Length: 320
Image 1 (cartoon, rainbow, N blue to C red):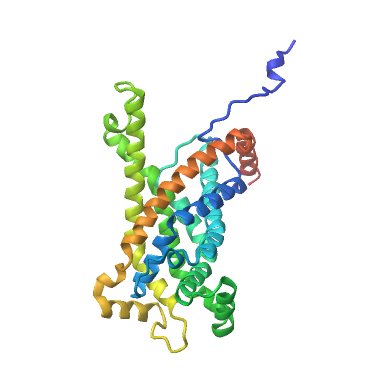
Image 2 (cartoon, rainbow, N blue to C red):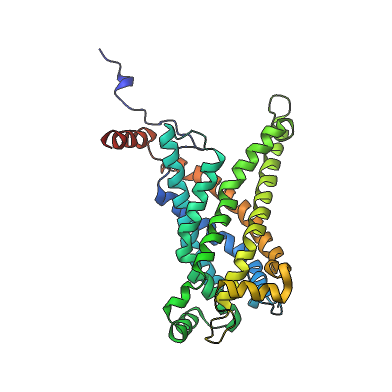
């Protein structure tokens, strides 16, 4: 007589709260919530960065600094939804090819998945940035600003600077999503006694070591992403901040020449401090939201059955 344990599935199956696969939709919801939270925290740094890049005077009035928050939050939700969703599905696909959802991805796979997700999100990032930059200059409402751009310059202007938005977002997403786990692994391997050594230290000290590795890797990723992408962001901001037909910022090459003639190489880094500060905070927020919300989603039953995921991939591979 066959054992009933082999025919009746357990009502409480074991779920790996850190690695069990989630659907692209679930990752997208996590990304949207994370993005809105990040905007609520970081909007003043967005204002300072845009203002400094355009060489305009700063105002420290909260009403001015938080101008454009609604459009930023409304735009960041689908942006981070795309970034989390595409990255999550790309990583899941790569793990399927390795034969297990608990398989470890190498640095190229981690960063490559994030870059793909960032590039995909630029289709929303570009027009959203355009609205935010113009709204901070004019003080118009979201609807009025949208109409003003469309009626005066045409709908195509919403995608002025699209290529640079794609480059910036791919590098930025690599910085906040792909690079932190890679750097954390390097830190732990280089000095395990400092960052995690549960055999020779107390549990509390091991936890502190783990948090230290998280903090250092996240902040380092934010600084790297901020400085690498800032020249691209500066050119994009100048292009999107000057839409008039007689503008001297006619194209990417001309804009870069004008910035260099105006301030030299330093001109490409105006506003780098507030933007890099924002990115560092964003990396910490996104990484912790990714971890915490992912675990909660798995606890609440949103995890995908790994045997079905891998089985489906195996069948598709056989058919091909």
